[in-house]
Image 1: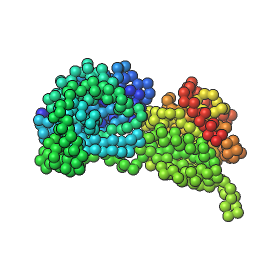
Image 2: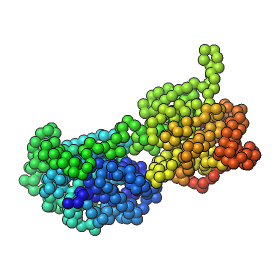
Image 3: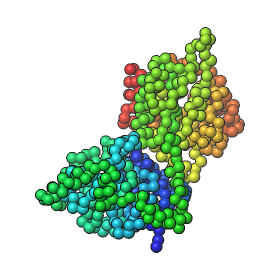
Image 4: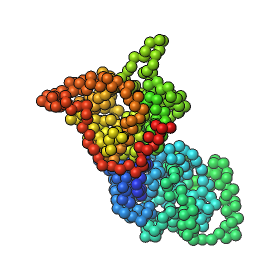
Length: 581
């Protein structure tokens, strides 16, 4: 007998917001089985394909080699007629023992496949299983769980589950691949909304749907998913229903509904289709298989061992007396990272405009206040450099990546996610990457977006750092008063063997004329000292000795590498509006 294989299909189109979580939830399934993962893309124009490519590199690099018995990731990207046309294409490639499909905004839970595998292994005549329906909101919070009683075969075909009782949750449903022979894939490909019900309708003609007492997936509700259009879904749903309800059916349904309202424990006792994973024989059989495969039951995957409290990305933002701008800066970050484990760290220089009071009310923000102006005990407070403040936040951050922004800047949508996807892709390919620069525009001083170069080296003004690279570099040199410290940081990172690249799809608006009195107070008088420090420190290291005279004249004016880009969101107007509030 060969290895057991799960075949999973994900249809997608412009799915950059959630697809990374979907893919990770499939690839990280741990157990004695192989996974055939088929992603059918409808010709995405956002960063979806780059994210998928990053996971292809991860598989090749062996990241999941200790998790299961092997993974194949097949990607098809071409225009299609909709989600179910893509799904039909994916089903035609299925080669595994058991099949399922997961949409690009949903996800499997840890050990989901292990639970399903144990049931199919123990009950060889069962062909069709589903788990406990489980619903999450757009930011990943669990908002609903509903234990079903039974899914009667005739009631499925008569449309009861969707009209009178809850839907069969598609992402929690698995079937033996032989059932796909019952499906007319041409007809399936023509559905726009209720193709899942067409599958259940056809399967129910010859098979009973069994319920496993386990939560195996999460259905995510958000404004963009297909199921949000319930009117269109139910209209297509009704067109598939093939049998009418008789008078006896209506009486049976009345009793059936009463059974669905029973307490969970009572449902399990009364149901004829409920499977308990607590069955000792089922567990013993699976433990035996785990031992034979050489993969112990206790072996966790990399995905399993990530602490739930540990963020994936840490946002670091410096602030001082720009409350309204800071609010929209943080709102944009929250929107961008709503599907990722993240933390926001704001270092404030002792704002007096209500910023500190507002920050302390934000329960998702780590606020560090370090007064840097005014007096204390009758003496002027000694001004600390920009690097000191940023280092406070960098050292406090615990994410794999750290993103640096300022309170007078605003990300253009997808900037951070695109940068993260590029970072992961390059790391997965084996590249030692330490920083990714975002294109930015000093509005209205500059009309084009650009990345900047100093002493012949690209540096990060706004962008991402690998936290381990920051640690190895020793963070920012606090001998700089304000300017050029960001250039110096990237040079220190490069000195440790890391690279710095630009993300061609990440853009930031920087309102250069915001609160000019604050900008003027940022140690402008010491800018020349900072400039000379950079040039002298990196002579013969970041640039050849013979170019010293050239950089002595040019460094400080920055070499901007511009990019033609039109911001359809008109992000700068939001920044300017905030300053005027």
